Length: 64
Image (cartoon, rainbow, N blue to C red; front, side, top):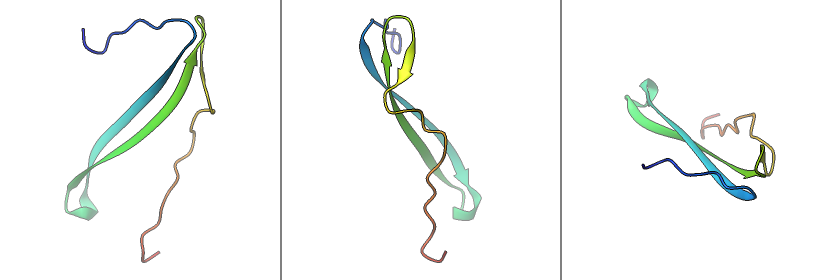
C-alpha cells in the first residue's frame, strides 16, 4: 500500500513533515509549515545525518 516501504539496512531517508493551520491575523489564510530531516538506517537504529532540528528559525516582518 501507499506509504508502506521496507526499511533496508544501510539506507538514507528524507523525513518530510508538515502542518497546516489558518492564521487569524492574515484573514484566516491557511498556511503550511514544513520541515525536512535526513536520516540513516543501519539495520538496527536510525540516526539523523546532520543532527535533528530542535529550534525554529524565525524571520521577522519588514516592520519589526
